[in-house]
Structures are given as structure tokens and as C-alpha cells.
Length: 101
Length: 449
Image (cartoon, rainbow over all chains, first blue to last red; front, side, top):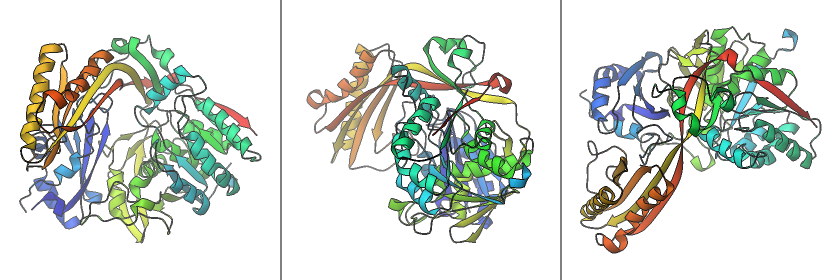
């Protein structure tokens, strides 16, 4: 099952950091997110683009996770050579991640 | 002061970035039954670019769309008694104030008090001081000769003062985005600047509103999964808050888009790091226990934000010149498109190594295949692709050569390349420092017409 079937997501940027929210459409799927979408697997998923540490924050009141990724923008929005300097497109690819339900 | 305190305040968000659509703000001013209309128009780097415009012309340096937005909204806001708060002052709030005075006179508007909040600009004050840059840990002195701007993020307090003094339009430079929305709540509800729980709730409100269409279904649609009606006519959000800091987000009935629990959740976490500690000049806001409930269609209740005492430090964004970026792109299609794009990239790579060996930072992308995520998760075989070379250089002349090398593949490279585009831009980079809030002293200027 793809993450996209149970969650939605948006990327934000600050400096050379990116955050990606992963929000369960339904509360019953939050446990699955907690178990399957770990900081380690998000880090390895984006290892070609994100070179820094990935931290996961949990927001149970809205059944959501927030991944904060260091060194994700090739030096920051203002000096990055990436076509997508803000990393805005990262959330869409994350939703393509395969889960084990 | 408490005698005049309001029970309910309605605020509209009229812009979520500098180039945002104009009509949604006009609709809100006309039909939103608003008390305030807030325009948030400053991104991280916008103010550094505005500072460069001000250096060229001291009467400029405010938002390029200030005039158009004010011509569209000021008469209606005046008629409907809607006060305006905006950071469209950018690098020059005082010049922006004078421009608004000029516009108000041309529209023959009576009795308007316009305020400009000054004091965020610190470029010359800190140029020779010792600070360490948050992003790299290097000393500020390492970029001081190339520095073009330094602006502290101010909080809500000076805006509150301007509103208490009767301002109808408040124009700021760099202010923390949520503070633009928190300020009218503090003023209307007589909130204490030390009541951090209330400030936390007001900051959650501001954070949800600051990107305008982001919370009403903009930047949300994913056909088949998340469908949004009438994005061509997207309505901007209205928030209605009460004196205890409770609030709901809604929009005009006849506008496009939607306000749902999902749109509010996405925006709540947008550009957030630790949800327990969202730092602003006013408060350390805690969004970790926020509850989001649907009251009715397009009317979403937000509860449970709290706050703790502010850090006493202000973030200062430093803009500095950081060389140039040269770029070239060229498309290939049909069978073998990927192979020809790869060959094109290889040719440019070898030529740059030979003729511009001093360049250290270059990207070779195939747009349509690996430009967004690298090679690890990209897959499939696209029928058309676009090769892209981008490099950072220390001189403009070197940057020009990058695009030229790509363009020269027309006559020297693989078969069938088309649609070459090249560009050169000067890089104004941004880093930050923290400064004690006592060292930043805001001031306010007024004009009355």
C-alpha cells in the first residue's frame, strides 16, 4: 500500500531546512503512520537529495507527523542550484512510499 | 481601556505572498464584514531585494504591488471601516506610507491615519559587531563586506501601539508573519503582552492565516485524492476570533476553494519545526495539542494552542551578495531522448572541466526524470526531457558561459535538441543571527490626511 492512500502532505522551507507533514486522513491510520513512516526510512528515502539529519515530531491531536530535514536545499532557498529551490515537490514523492499494513 | 473591548473580531487575509492575486482581497473587503484586512507579502529574501531597489532609488524599496493593491482596496476598506495591516513596507515602510497618502488623496478619501513601523532595519548598526551566523556557525564578519541588508523580525507590540493611536492603515517592514494578525487581537481584546497562552492562540491564528489561500484549498488539490472546487476563483480566508482566543476559519460563500479540517491541518504544520516550540518575537507558541473540528461546511473551529514566555531574542535576516548562478536548458524528445540528454550533459561537463575548472558547484539535471529527487526514487522512461546545467560562479562573465555552453549544443551537440533557454542571476543569499530584543527599538511615524 502506498502512503498516498491514507495520508496527505505538504512541504515547507526555512533556510536550508525542509519540513514535510504527513497527515492521516482518518485517525485509525495514525498507528500505521507511527510504525511505518519513521525518521530513518524518510532519511533513506530522500538520501539522494537530503544530506542532513531527519527528526520526526508527532502531533497526535491531529493524527499527524512532521519531518524536519537539515541540509535539504543545497545551501538554502536563496543560493540553491536545485530547480525546486524550496523542496516543495518533496511531499508528493514521499506519498509514493510503500507501507506494510 | 477595557470598557471599549470588543467581543468578536473578524480578520481577512488579503495576500499570502508578494505577487498574490488581488481580486480575492477586494471581495473580502466588500463582503467579508471585516474589522481588519492583513496583507502578508514578505518572504525570506524579499526584503534583501527590496533593499537593493532602495539603494538605487531612496523613494522605492517597498512592495512592487503596493500601489495596485491599495488602489483596489483602500476605498472599499475606508467605506466599510476595515483597517489595513501589511508588511508591504519591505525595506522602506516610510516611503510606502507616503505612497499610500498619495493614493488616498488621489482617491479623495477623508480622515485617514496611516502609520509606518520603523526600526527593524539594522544593516549599519550591526555591521561591525560580533555575531555568529545560525546556519553555518561562521562569524558575521565573514560576510560583512558583501552584506546588503539586515532586518530584525519585530513582534506585534509596535503594531498594537499604532492601532491604539488610531491608525487606519499600518505599514511595516520585517515583522514576524503571525504577529500581523496577533496585533489586532491584542488591541481589540486588551490582551496582556504577558498572557502567553492567549498570545499562543493568536499566533496559531496568524500562522493559519498568513499564507492566505493556503488554508482555503490553494496548494492542496491532488485530483482524485484531494479535489478542490473552483481554484480559478479561490477565496481567501476570514477568521472570526473571540476574546478568549477561540476562533474559526471560514471564507465567502460565493468564492472558490474550501476550508476543511484537512486544509487547516496542512497549513498548521506548514514551515513548522518542533510543534511544541514555534518561536516568534511575541511568544513560544505550542501547536502540539491543537484540535480541529468542523462546525459546518467551510467553517472550521481551531482550539487548544497554548504558549510560554518568549525567548527575548529576535531573529535577524542578513542578505548578502553571494556570486552568480548561470543556467542553461535544452529539450530532447522521442526515442532515445534520455540518452541524448545524458550525452548533452556529458559534453557540457567535460567542457566546463576543461575551460572553467575553477567552478566548484555545478548541477547536471534531466528535467522530467531526476531534477526534483535525484536518481534514487526517479523511475520510468519519459518521452521528452529537458537537460539542465546550473552552476554557481564568482563573476557574471563566468555565469554567462554556462548557458552559452548549453545553447551551443544546437550546432555542436546531440541530434534534435530544441527550446534552449539560458539565464544569469546575481545571488542575494540570506543567513540569520539572533539579537537581544533590547537592542532593537521600533518607532512609529504617522501621516494624517
